Length: 83
Image (cartoon, one colour):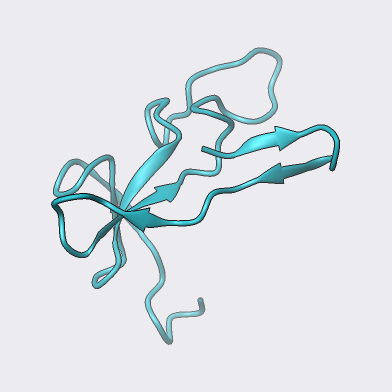
């Protein structure tokens, strides 16, 4: 879950980490602020991760889901696709 570091004046993101018990799947930082969308007039739950702050990334295929094998929400560009 990304967060704002006021001392450094920047957004801090977390590295991907393996999803226990699910080979090929990794926790990946959604990029929102602890499940809340950046900006706007008032805080609201992030639509990409449903407020969890992280997504599941299947590295071999580049697929992104809410959890391993769960509702898919997109994919990362694979090698050679403009990454």
